[in-house]
Length: 156
Image 1: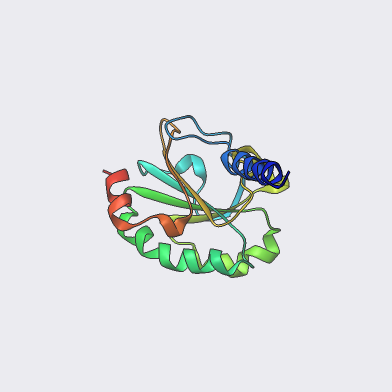
Image 2: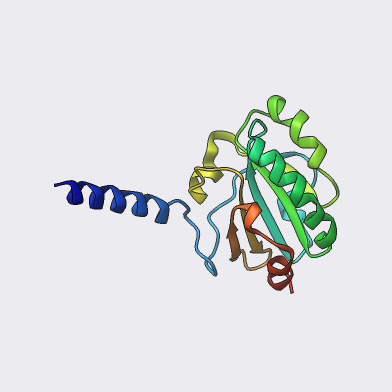
């Protein structure tokens, strides 16, 4: 009985992890329904790649990951635009996240969590890098897992 219970728990855990995101590498992205008040509009992005970063301003892991990720944004800004997506209200989020906004990084708001839900995002920070023209995912995961060598090979 104990083994059966452990097996069921393991299967439930694995199935929830496998369906955590609604994206797959090489597949077209779900719709992105956001509004932008700070930074560039999504349809005006000229870089070959876009990194969507799902964040929350009160999450210490998000702030830490963004602080570390800023170096990548500066280094690869000519090839990759960064878009911070939050489901928070504009007044709450702007103050904290606006320090990360620059010419290659914008902040957008996911009203009603439509984009979070379309991508299946349940945990932040979570990043998705995609090709701008084809809208196909080339990488996704935790920003803390993304290293310079891997990013360089993605953006070649």
